[in-house]
Image (cartoon, rainbow, N blue to C red; front, side, top):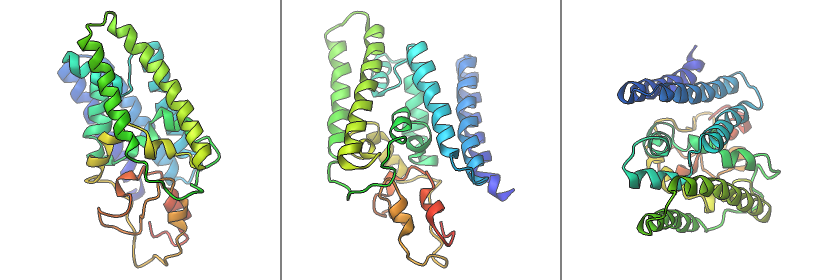
Length: 272
């Protein structure tokens, strides 16, 4: 029963958010939306505990396809960062604004970069590529993410300053075109750097929100030093180059952990 604590806690957190938003907004969509996402994430964690090989991938597909296809394509909601700026400028706290608040701004205080490991529809595709374990040292290119972050803000701000008409249609096509660009750039970078997660490390603008809060994350990978034999297998298996043997919050690439548990799978002593 102790092993089931994490999926139960995660489901409870999402249900609290779901019920709170439903009651405060009067919109039952939020109850269904966050309940579905919470169930999907908890299912993945449960399957991982049961040692199912593709546990995390199931959650990625359940959540990622739901947000990309249903919310994005069919419901015309721009769930990318441009959608967040759009709703923020219009003063409407719904759709992408709520999504970012829960998943990418305040949520990381609880589950860190779990969004990147279990729900991101960009990473959902990139994780199918052949370089699951980075084959080259990490590059010092993280500054690019700040350029894409500012560029997304300038793009939406320019639309408002220019008093562009039919903004909702523009934002829909910005979502479609933006996703295509993300996939193309992500796939190219994966093959250039031989690293599926190169896009996440260097280009993704969303990480500008995720990283600061992830420093204080409640759920973190920790190392039992009494069991660790310093074999280094965990570090080699980590797709984000995190030093999980260091339990301090200042560990190398500490705010990059996506809770994929690849390090725990690789540990021969179950020290993680």
